[in-house]
Image 1: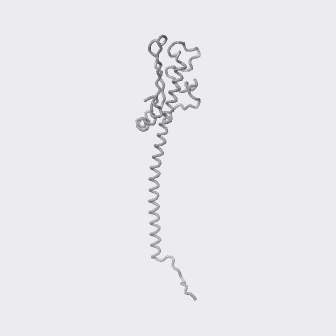
Image 2 (image 1 turned 135 degrees about the horizontal axis):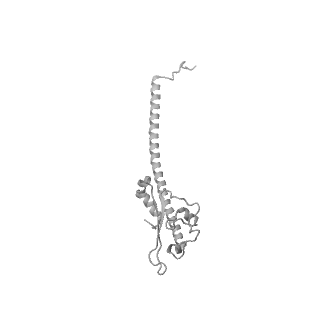
Image 3 (image 1 turned 45 degrees about the vertical axis):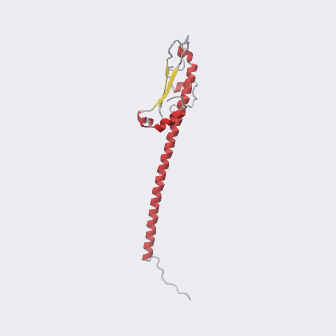
Length: 178
């Protein structure tokens, strides 16, 4: 016949302190693990945010380059009107001011696709200015020049001075402007 204790004490005072200590260590380990995970998430989020800003700047450079190519097409198509060889038709040239065409007008003329965004990804305002040719265009020929640029709004000036953003944007322009 085997001896068995009649009462088993599960809440022995020494066992309780060990359990409390174990719970305390688990809580401390959890807090440290959560703090480390939070720091990693913060650093990772910062990295991905910078990647997104870089992509927006590069996309804006491609956008400006596309707009420049559209203006180049417009200059070729409207060259006779710009140098004064022909006069504008009664129904107009399709431009409110041929010296300052808008993106909407370039889309309507077929120089840009119908879905072309009105603003670049960084949200700047785009401008186009065509300069009147100088000299005797009819006898010696002349050069028609245009300027395409994007300018930040007042709230975007800090971002516009970011060297990294400017570098990505200028790289995408493939040397076509600075």
